[in-house]
Length: 417
Image (cartoon, rainbow, N blue to C red; front, side):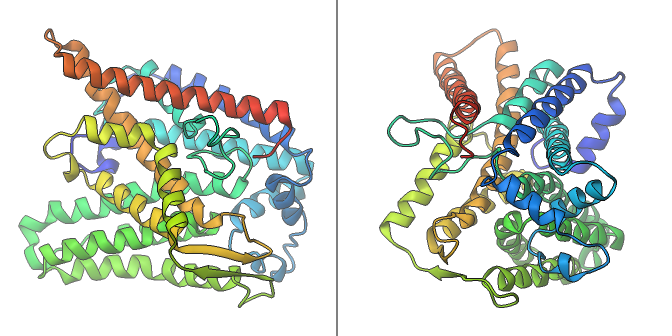
């Protein structure tokens, strides 16, 4: 994807130009599905894990009694899929593992397509596939004495223990590009239609459906995307004050999601259904430091890339700008919001920062591979670029080694986190 271009149109263009079956991606999808199926089937045996808890909830769904479903309105989609397979005769442990493995594989395919767009189709398929695989397994860097268990107390762009987060990350790779697609469509039409510029209403409908589907997975992506999109579109509205018709369309697209999000929040805090948990707000030096520290550990490589490989016009990439706004809002939410009661210490307000870090990983790794390919093909290689690419590769290796360590730790320790 050339800087500032439409991710959806870039995907369509690259698909049309593809002349053969993508063997590396098919092989990677087979490996990811198989390994994920093993991991989630293995994890199901531990009754205290999120997977087992959510599976039991899904097993209680009764499709003849809507209340059994609406009482879990904060995150019903994964449970509905598992309950459906269960009704078809699949054992609960297999139904849970299959849905998780399918979500992980769908995530891999979407990550590859997004990275291919960012790299403008200029990166070898095998290299791009390895990059997409890394994104699907990456964790924060492991620093002995700080996060010896990698995930616990820190978070990770990808997790192995929470099925609803796994589902919502798939929606992340659909919602963010489509928000950008709608704005890019507006920019394409603007010179011709001027103040009457609007995007097709079917695009508004698709965006609304995607946002609602993301919330049905889990509200954590929308925790970051709703305020980020609000700031993004407000700034553009200031730049285009005579185009209220288009920005009104975007408000209508987000309105159902905002209403659903508020309902989920009321559910979560015990207003809609009785539950002994709540939310407190407030900023402390410790909460501010922990939120920033966790993002630095989760996104050390992406943040380094933004500093080391900044190019003029890079932030005109609408998707990168929107993602950075998501990172800022998710870190702020982790600073200011905490749970009380039964969920105290669960860290659910950190989930948005994990999804935001994951989206940042996809974009910056795509750019890194693209810039690395351009650098590799040049005859002259200045020492400062050699140093920057070397440091970037070192950070990438650190993240990869930490991800392998995390999986080994889970298997050896029988620990969900």
